[in-house]
Image: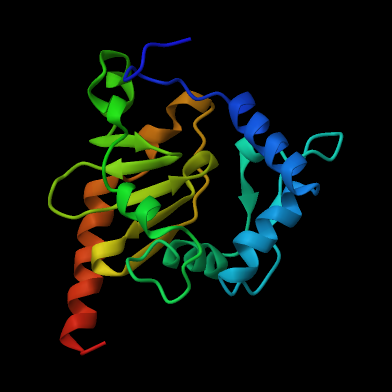
Length: 193
């Protein structure tokens, strides 16, 4: 138990409990819930592959596998005023701000990595010039979202130096992707798109 307003350490088992509760409420498997509430609503071209444990339970901590284009579609549902509101707009607008525990001393180790802050399983860029965040995957895969610029960048990668806890240092960070997003947005603006 923690005092309100202090850092929260996320554990995979926490996600599993939430998934288990949701499955009980809807009396169905996570894959059906995920497909019905989000995946089928983003216009995905292909099925996503959800990681499962040896019992067939969704191992949501490990994420899913999807095509590059479908990952981009997932990113598009984070745009402000998206044509299909898959995620509540208040949730999306809140993603550009760090979690309220950002200033807690226990959170410092996360906040010092490449100028990012953590929020609801997303990493928030803290350069204060472009609102952006990304959903991070294993060994460098990321879906970068810049809602104010209407830009999504999907980064597919396999970064492995033999140390699981060090791959974050091998992947280009927020400043590089923020510059790319600004460049893309400006190019589209100039073309009237």
